[in-house]
Length: 283
Image 1 (tube, rainbow, N blue to C red):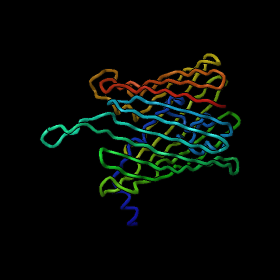
Image 2: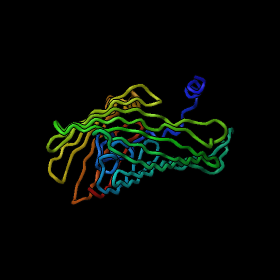
Image 3: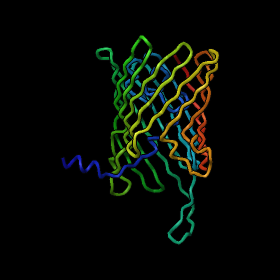
Image 4: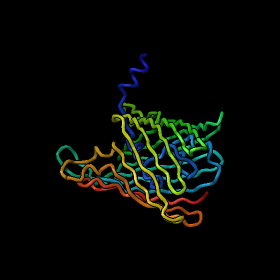
């Protein structure tokens, strides 16, 4: 009981882990698999991932911050490296005197393995995180676990992912920080040239949220993508009559042979916007 209470009062850090830098799924789709991104979204999808994929993604986010992802997936194994960079910031003392500049850097390595048991895909991934703020650094470790069930008819996939179960091993100073856990249940329905999906999310730092969206292929080469995230709508400032659109993500995908190029944009109005781009090879 004392361990449980201690967990509840622990400070939550490493918030960058809750930001999705990938454009391919338009910011959702935890019931999907087979596109090279299962180790990032739901390791349960690795159980059905037999093709080889190489992928890279970049997100230019609000406040001049930057996120990125590089991934590899093959034979039920997935590897992902994600990073965050704050951009350069002025270093000042309590009197406002400037002493140069500094940045905030995070990088994590995520390695996952999937397997099938009684027609259900299961997966687990372990992650190691390095964080650097000026002259301070921290090391953390954690796991993601997931499951995926496929209904061949009527082509529905249901996924469950519990992500970011972990904490710092070496703290910045003294206080250890836990990872911002996230629990997601996602469902996806496939059609001949599209898919639609719903994710129900419970992040550590907010109440329940909903993501809904999908992809529609206009031609075999070009597809439109869109989603809406109720949690991202909290980024609105209230100064714009369009702030309700702050949870919207729209974009497109281009497929040439086995190369997939995707772009998505998320508007946050007074706070700026998020530009995601993903490039993957395989399938």
